[in-house]
Image 1 (cartoon, one colour):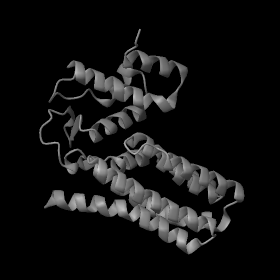
Image 2: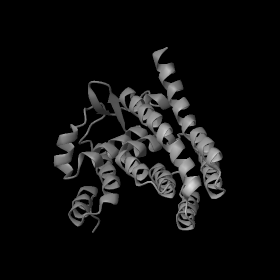
Image 3: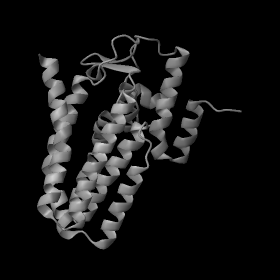
Image 4: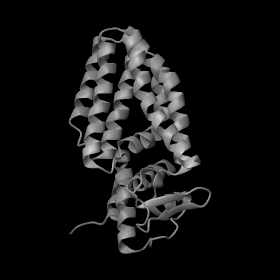
Length: 250
């Protein structure tokens, strides 16, 4: 007998399997949309209501809803709520990145640029062989992640940045990234979600090269190069969001 997503969700929640909860909520919400329980054009229940319905935290709900917005199944209308897509007008990238999410991602990136550029420099200065080896292992895992799985790509990307923070030998860098974890994951899923498969593969390869540049600078103990590589990597996303924001305001 095949269990539906909601039964699986309850089982996972009772077992404390935090990592799988978001994906199970995504599946459960998709099931409800497919069955018509959430009809096209209808408003999604509020976050507190969804937390009660699925028995999970607000963080899990936010991650799941963000993922479904990337998949164009949900649409956020600023100041009104989140609605089930009716399938119309969802071809453009900025149609499914709502203003609030876009602005928040820009703010998070501005903070990350200030923190992580110096973090990378300290990582190059202080990294131990043990932590360098761990960073290389994370990078190797990134290279084998399926490019069509935006959630897996985002998690691998975040783990790389955490590993860089660990190399800095300053626990506060790691603490800051973990505190911002949910916001960073949402931003990374926005970055990794590409409608066109060819464009997506090209983008992922470029991101890998940028991470490789950071890794190489840290391995060489080159503080200036590590700082530049991290700033270049994060600035690309910030500029992309600024362009989207400017386009919307025109």
